[in-house]
Length: 305
Image (cartoon, rainbow, N blue to C red):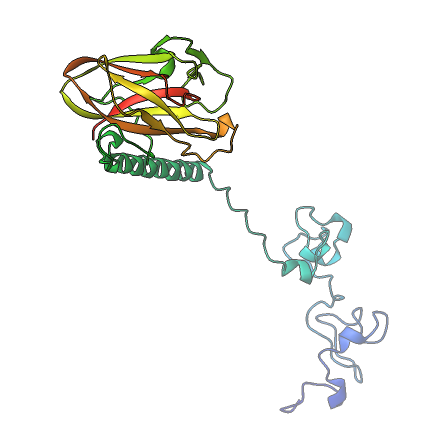
């Protein structure tokens, strides 16, 4: 046997893989000569190893035991399965993105605490603004109001303050005065500025009067304010201070510009300068001869000139 010649008859017969495609019963097949079989002329050389069909080799098994190559697919381990054999498996499923876990719900306690804090800040701001405004307000009783000489009346510019303060001047409802000569309280006409809505009526009867007894700390000149209502026309009453009648009556004009006969539209106020003594004083409003007494009275109060 020369170099390059392995003993085959011809180069094409020297095929080490010939046993793979020859039939088992044919010439030179798996059942042909095994190891130690003498070479026959014209017969291709066979493999030195035992020839088996692909898939029949036993790996790590004893003789007579079934090998991996011949395992029944149905008897395969139930603990393993290819991904593509699972329900819904396949390439598309293997590339499907893993869903993200939902974010935990945010607690509402933080939002509630924030809302309460905002409301508290707003309430504090409103309270501070109210305190500031109240500190800037002025006492109406101390305001100056230019007026005429004694016994004259003018149209009022503002309502006096009813807030009780130290040293405040007296103020009363007309119904609390001493009524005489036919003067009486009533509630028929709406609009009176008293808490109960009552007023003094019947002043148009000659001799009717309302007397106010009051105390002041200092003698001097004061403004006497009178709240009243007229039926769309002017009126006046005689003013008597500490038993002495003034020469000029207090004028009770139709400052509300009410139409004639409209008692409920005629509520207004006027004032007159008077001189009072220190201590107790009496002020009397009465209907005397020469007065125009068609008027209702609701309040009386003092103010400083």
